[in-house]
Amino acid sequence: MKDEAGFTGKPHEDLAALLAGEMAAVDALIKARMASKNAPRIPEVTAHLVEAGGKRLRPLLTLASARLCGYDGPYHVHLAATVEFIHTATLLHDDVVDESAQRRGRPTANLMWDNKSSVLVGDYLFSRSFQLMVETGSLRVLDILANAAATIAEGEVLQLTASQDLKTDESIYMQVIRGKTAALFAAATEVGGVIAAAPEAHVTALRDYGDALGISFQIVDDYLDYSGTSGNMGKNTGDDFRERKLTLPLIKAVAAADATERAFWKRVIEDGKQVAGDLDHALELLARHDALAATRADAVYWSMQAKAAISGLPDSKIRRLLTGIADYVVARVA
Image (cartoon, rainbow, N blue to C red; front, side):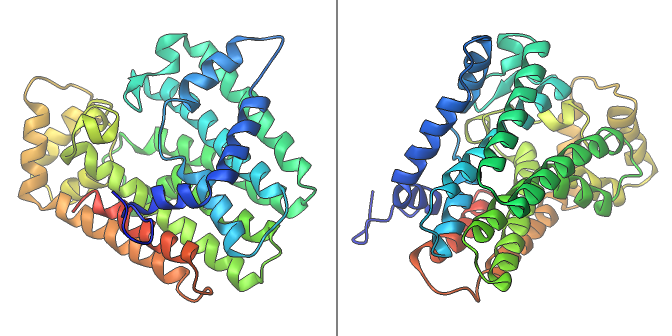
């Protein structure tokens, strides 16, 4: 339901409506560039994930940032498609690494086809993303997005070594999520300002907004894995626990654990010896140490940082919607 101004109260939906024409152009470009006359499996696998829904938040952020900075050229569409291709490629690879069976409420591509197809199609999308970057003619844009792609991979590798190690603390966790999630959010908003030739202060503000928003977004996802429902996550509650991922709620609980509790965490996370009832016990320990409440507080902090980053930019409908998105991200853990 919309109010008198035409807003739904869901800022990402309002932003999508405001930028509907440009998003349609992004979708058309994505469809054209994911085609392959020699390997029909590429569009099949890509379409399975791209067309599965989702908020398409990252490309929206690129379009919004460019529009906020007064851009009237064509290349923000290329950059938004680039961001979505990078994101889709990482999802294909992640599902193979995590041996996931569900993504956005649907079977994963690696389950529908196989791991080889997911990895190779992900590689193809990375290649397509670099072609789109080059077409903008901006070396700075290429530098930002290439660095983001490398940082994402670095974050994923760090997670491999850190996520099942009880010595992993909150500083390492932040390195992981800044790499695997926040880097692309920050690049998505930064390149919008760069392509618009915005003042450096505005570009920095947009980058800082994307970084903080991405951190908050990932913390909320990690929170919801222990408190949400399958319906609002598109995956099963407790998946991170079953996959032995030491995310922020567990890190906080482990830091406060006594010897008996630490032995439990070592068995289920480091040793991978999980039995029936372990998830319920884990939830009891999270509650005992207020780990979920502390995790939510961290998500709110980073949401506030995101809003503060763009508070000095010229007032506009888009800036207000971007501020609203920062609030909406943490509204999921209200």
